[in-house]
Image (cartoon, rainbow, N blue to C red; front, side, top):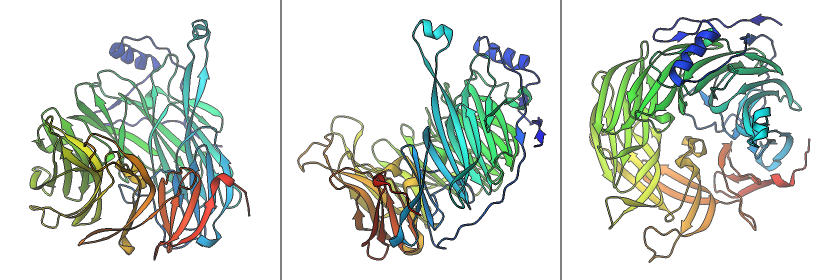
Length: 558
């Protein structure tokens, strides 16, 4: 096995440490702490393995992602033949095509909390973490045990019976992950502790990231931990690389095919952003900057045509900053939008940005970014309620998932009510309009799509979309602040056209027990709804049931 050491790359605006003593001095100055570090080691291993292909339907859904070609981990994946489901601490591999032959063919039990899966050909990637109880001599005396978290990436060959072919463990907490071609990129954070550099274990062999592969900026106020970027070639999982950045607490990432951006909030109500160049196993932290305000999630960020764009909410309103990728310098900005409100959702689409802000009423802003030096508002639509997730239906239409509201008679605010689903026409960007809307349930009605876009399924070719919903109903004369009672949970299936949105059916997993539908996928003409207890297959033509697989009554078959 060939061992290749870390290679330090000089990056404009970013530096690396030359020794553990220099790293220690820097952190001590920023944190007034005393730290001792282990010796550095090496990080890249080489191996080889063939990547096989599986038979499947040619027509099936993929994970709802932000950037084409950049996959995101999720609890459910399909390759058109099989469904891979992470449920509690188990992975179920289900033969799903054709739907009437659906059965469980394998199960893996995972010792930890599963964050998500990737599937590529006959490689399955499982990302999970587990907490290890530590009782050192000092802590035992005062009965204060602490938990130490390790993050794991296991790679399996699933051409036949699942066979683990690689395992990488990282000291720290999971932030996010992406996959481009055969490479999985995992972002984690390790809090700064005594006597430890960032640690990684490859198939049980532990190494540390050396100081000359830890980037930092002189501008950082108070380093919280090491943000670790780990790249793994899943076709040869012992071939990997890792770099670290001394940062605050990383909260969100955005990734294009060439760059990874990590963001962390600062106490000054600003956000610090770092650009990390990614190409295969070549990881290099290039530069960074600080922008006013805070982002809400990954959709607050976008890269397009050589520019990185970010939407933030600050004390002076809401802002758009256009940043040149090469040097991470702000070249254009739009500030102070909708003062007194905050951003609830953002979506960048080419040279446009759509923002939803809210306090009492929902303004949908259409913003022109065709001239990066002069972003400008083109139009604004004010309607009751707000959208927490925006999904492009095509270049001129958006689907909004959010909440209806009732204005309060007691003050300058509104009471959240049922789930609101809207279709926006933005073909005339100066005059956006709401073509159609549907309100499901009353106060407390919920969909995981509000906070996790992976739960949204658009079947564009069939003009359908599907989302899980918990519907709440209350008495007609109940006050707006009162919550009602659950009346249904399951997948709501909608037809969509340029004229509007129509609810055409519901699929539930609840019988005498409550089972929450969490994800939906389709293969060929079957819609699969998935909970921790069941996988149901229904016809996409008339929603009639084809087959039901009960997971909690697991019988392994071949």
